[in-house]
Picture 1 (cartoon, one colour):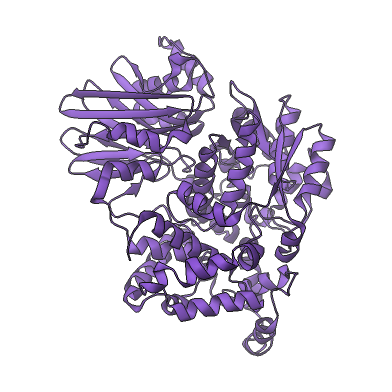
Picture 2: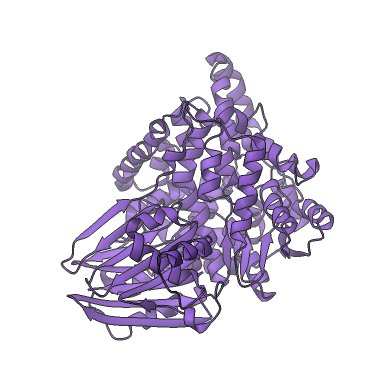
Length: 638
């Protein structure tokens, strides 16, 4: 795991590359390297920060140059040994035992076709000194990031936006449509960037730039190809077990110890226990919160379940209580995430990774991706339930159910009501048709709320985003699998997973100089998951039913069938208590209100409703605070 930067035919000062590397030094504290050359009309500068995981020798440092090709690479290729054998059989001689050299030779011999042979996570740039062309590529699911900015026939790229910003200088302007999209989703989707003129190379794509400025981009993988069809045979329970076990085994490839997130929930427990039973020494890292915070959030006690798993499998468990100085942590989190991302789970990920790094651990396994693939989110079940709800008489829905739920409090002074929060959220989209209900389940606000919250001058941006949002989720229909659950899962894998979960995991883990691996987000697991029909994923009120059945080979039922927990933070407690003054100072008297970007009156009502416990607006308030903090760090005016 590393950080990469590069300039291709982009004029820049002599210290620009060094400054870009300094901005992402946390991604690779073990070594730094640069490459500069002019060849066939191309002026190329490449930089690399290394976190040594595979082949710890200096020979594997990057940029890595061999026989006319130069590569900078962020990620891991888990099947590199098998690929090396295949390449060796056709005469390739290797001088290292690194996956970097294997990747370089794979591209030399197979070109773009090599991308579909790779099992791993990656973002890389490869320069051909013989032609002056450069190729960039990103893994199928967007586990690793790659920001790019095209400039007058040239290209800037980097693992993090902050490095691109240095090279682009004062050329970058904030994209207000992207800011509005961050409020719609509480993250900025892959189709946008917070700055005009900067893009994210889409997952499953590669691109080539030539000395004459020609830029072409190609898609090599779309998870739609894995979607279940009538002619497919569904994988059985034993088959699913074999695929998941194989993925965990592949993800253990490393020349340093590998540990794991262990929340005590199904997904992380399954990954951790499989790794341990495969004979690996794995330690677990779990979090807990202050009792008062958990009670107000109505959160289950994850630590209790994590201890059960650790004891039963002889796993050393590191317990981390998260009671940070959240007023200090918020701006630090905003800085490390690059773009405004309003999911406080990033704090959890960072603090776990930091604790692991302080213990000497560089690599952690995560259970991320299982919910997206196997129908594990509450929104998945809620959308199925909504179809039944819509069959109730309109009079009953409008005159009885809605008024009762509207009157219920989401919290009292010291206690939150999880079911009431869920019911209020459910009724925000339950009356809508299937596809529209799923789209609305993604967003914090309905269109009328957006128009109340934002300056009327932004109504056009709101309407454009709503139209784009509908267009993106046309893929929900285009999935054409005749299966509501798999349509939701496919859309999540395309958008929610790379746009939010993988994005914050990468930035938060790398801020602590650690690598997080995600065995569920693997091509073999994805193919298996999409061969399974939705009725086996959500069975009655049981989410992830098929995964739970498979897990019975490794886990006790009290873990498998425990109440679902969310990898998040006690936002309600933080907003009401720790951040109460900060809400007033940073948000109510902040630049977004003063500039008129936000309607202060509507914002005041949101805050008061949340404090009174009549509505749950903590996520919206947190997102707005992250956005205000991000804008202040940019010293930007609206």
